[in-house]
Image (tube, rainbow, N blue to C red):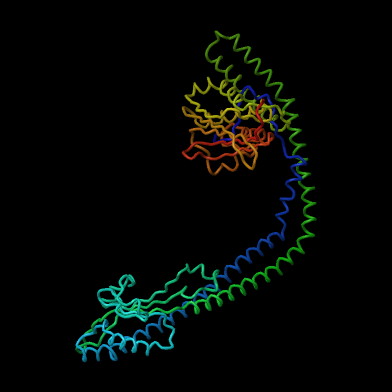
Length: 508
């Protein structure tokens, strides 16, 4: 099936419902040609310019806003780190050191020590945007918290607490209760939506010069930065809206100018293209008519005489030598082939409206397979058929026979030896209308991707001696029945021909 080579058969005398494009088709194609107007390129360019401006503006606005957001968050983190460093220094100098000198050890469970530490902490963070402050000991328990209900509780420590307790660098992260991309669509944000958390090792002072300061615990500082984040989102929204608005205004002015200049030109070019297409169509029809008349009068009748004479001589020369028999056989075969070529030209150039009889697709397939059974058996080709019952269409059984026959023969020629042709047929529904779907899949090499788009073009063939009318005739028959033909390669190789026909109600 990888070629548009026509095949002969018993139904070759039936004329396909196809023809060259006429005035009606020309009138349908003319509006589409208007897309080639010179100013249409300017319109396309204007749309591309809009897309480019929008993308550039969005990219620039997001870059600016993200830079501002990153700067704000960086400053917040720097402020939080400075604050925890100050807290670390104040806690050690004003609480830890005096408590150790006075009591010998730190025991925050004692009310006096806890109140002492709380006074130190409150004096440092008073008036600052601190939501919560905790101190963890080495058992991961909360030793101190600005919220007294958290003291002594386990399971509140962050995941990277152990690293900080072992002297790692301070950790800072932003915790959000919603995904970051949802934040612009959920403004105003609730308090606590975005929280900055800083985890800092609580250190004392080194006992000896050059020695690293010992870690006494971990300090966790939490700040609510939702308000600052909302300001960044508002700034980001202003930038995006202004960029989009300026881009749309610029594009609107450009498009208005193009439309005003294009309107008059489109009308004139539409009329010119209609006349031009009609003239070309008439010239093609006239030229094809002259060729067909010449073929019909000058070739077809002599070919019939040559064919019948060769067949008669073959019957009378049964005892002739082998060389004479081969010559007569060659004459007969070539006359049959040339006669079929003439018939293909006539079928393609002579339109015929198909009858609207109720046709059983399964019955037509039965007739085609019955005729080709012997030929396919000689070539070692097996047929696997899976078709549903009750596949009826409105159309011409002879023309459908011709179309299915050509598809089978093209598949046989493509395999060029033993193989399998698989037929699948079913009834499908689309937009409330029924369609009969037939798929013919052979085990051959499949379609060449380079020539696949051209296989349905008239006179295009990849086989020596082919007319290039086989598949175009099939297409014209299917289209004349209101159907569609599709060519593609099968998922596991081979050529796949799909035929879609409007379904008809089965007989009562």
